[in-house]
Image (cartoon, rainbow, N blue to C red; front, side, top):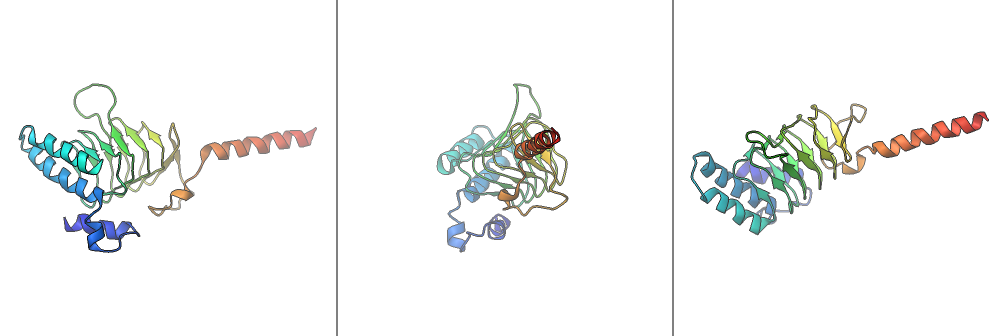
Length: 200
């Protein structure tokens, strides 16, 4: 629990004091989940789902009791976050509001994503299916990710594009520095058209 509090001070510049941090809905959602998951793991019926639903009602964050969390998971402004039953969330992961770690189809077994360590997933991003998101990756706001992502990678767009920012590692809060592949492609097309027109 101390690590869950400490990570908020480490990652959120708005965290002023312990009393404010103890009111973070993401913190409460993580704590509710840890209790629900412990009970779920020993196959206690009904109670884990009740805790999960209570947490959803109080925090606006829905986490299935079966999901596995590492340490120092930070859910910032977490309203609308949904995390499915077989999702695995690694250590030092940051999730912003509206993130979905969802499944595809009705198959049994592993059907939700596995998120590596030190991953940041931006607001409104959707990560679907039994895919792997590599360590130290960044998923841009609004991205829709349905294929595995290698470590140290930045992903943007819908459908998602894998980008690398010239080897430069992004700070977790540098959402404004994410690349825009569509804008870049349009710029390249415009330059080619201009070059062709200049040849006339």
